[in-house]
Length: 227
Ligand SMILES: C[S@@+](CC[C@H](N)C(=O)[O-])C[C@H]1O[C@@H](n2cnc3c(N)ncnc32)[C@H](O)[C@@H]1O
Image (cartoon, rainbow, N blue to C red):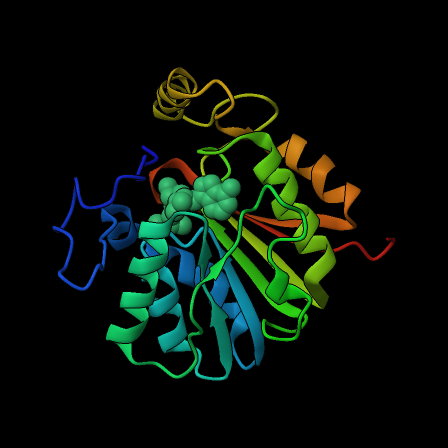
């Protein structure tokens, strides 16, 4: 079943004195996610943004595998930004930049995308378990930014639970969806077809659906050749 993890530290390891948070789901999903990212990122260099990094654990793990790639974690939540920076300091890797404060509901993302202090054109955008725990405008902003900032051969990797043809892929996801909507009517498990429409509106196309553990998927988008 997809995990609802937003109050990190309540489940999983306690908060570390330096502010590092732990997401239990990270330990279960990072290898499967890396198996999808790796074939695309292997041998490449460039800038990759993680949108909605949460604790910051994914970026640290992926950056270890890819010394030629500069990783730019990001989030909106101040406690998460502190955790990301603490994980960055703890890892001591030269290819992780300080976290950017990005509110994905803003299609511009953040000033650093324009003022020369942030990444250049992006090799990839990675986003895990965000768009169902956020209003639809967050998905809109995520795709708008991906459409604007990805380089010609860049890709957007979107991990989480999704509906296919308007139907849940597992009963556990339907239960999870109901719990999300009870919590906030603007949240909910998103439909792949709706995301494809959003992608098309910004010149992106779905090229791969990778099955992941616990009834999750990774959706991979790239620039449409006809756009
Ligand atoms: C369930 S957590 C997932 C975190 C991490 N990607 C992971 O898989 O462990 C969702 C994250 O999305 C972030 N988030 C929610 N709304 C956002 C927004 N409008 N812009 C950017 N991040 C947002 C939250 O702060 C939180 O860190």
